[in-house]
Amino acid sequence: MIPTQFAQNIISIYGAQGKTWLENLPDLLEYCAQKWQLQNLRVMPNLSFHYVASAFSLKINKPIALKIRIDHRNFMAEKNTLAYYDGSGCAALYDWDETVHALLLEQCIPGIPLASFDGLEDGSIFIAAHIIRLLQSKKITAYNSQHFPRLSDWLNIFKSPIINKLPTHHHQRLISCLQLNEVQDAITDFLLHGDLHQGNILLNGDKWVAIDPKGVIGNPAFEVASFICNPISEILTQSNPREIVANRIHLFSQALAIDKQEIKVWSYIRALLGACWALEDNTDHHPWLKIAEIIESI
Ligand SMILES: Nc1ncnc2c1ncn2[C@@H]1O[C@H](COP(=O)(O)OP(=O)(O)OP(=O)(O)O)[C@@H](O)[C@H]1O
Ligand SMILES: [Mg+2]
Image (cartoon, rainbow, N blue to C red):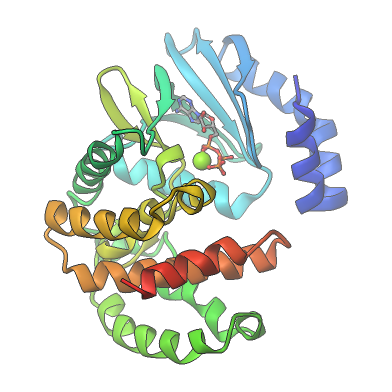
């Protein structure tokens, strides 16, 4: 019931806390199964750091996806973001349980992720742009803005010592990008998904919807950056990564009426954020540096 690779991922990130959580996971699942009267609980393939299973809930009489997270803060961020989007452009949130960090989600059926390349590249960009328009169809109010972090909070990582592990030529460039964008970030009023890459867009009936939002208030141009940089290893093994990235910037700019230069700058920042997060997690940050350099060269 608990995939080996998933268990290893949890222990590598959370150590002893992760081990205890894994030991308790069967009880957490049993608790959720009882609470929502779940039948046919089946773990999803290729889990990374969160437990996700499909099931049928007799309580709400619908197929569901059950997602259980180990950490409270990210659980709250995802729950609040899903509640805010309220099923528009995003899988619906049916219910949640704060004590066990469980989300009861609309199950996307057939649930296949959005693919790129092989002739699907341009179409996938228009699908993502359509989702972004739905997600940005309402503006955040002063009341609900308190529930979410701002992009400027995420960018504080560039003020930490980790920045010294990036090649020095990025430092000055980052400073000028951030000075420009801090001003824009201060006046923004959109809640961004924050990680809208191809793997977080699933087919649901005849519609594509987002899953797995992080929830961050920031400049709308940042929303396309995750898509532009991913799937990172696949982009870098294509024969023409620069053309792929340039085409994405161009098409998103047209589809969303956002200035190309703004998309380019935010994608560059996103790539360097990816490099810093990889350094924090002790994973390979070099692909992120490569993408940053490709973006810079456009
Ligand atoms: N609502 C849903 N309907 C159908 N399948 C889902 C749903 N939510 C998640 N999944 C499946 O579970 C997988 C992991 O879910 P999710 O992306 O939310 O977690 P994750 O651990 O953050 O993944 P990653 O970090 O790799 O993006 C998805 O790739 C998808 O296959
Ligand atoms: Mg995901």
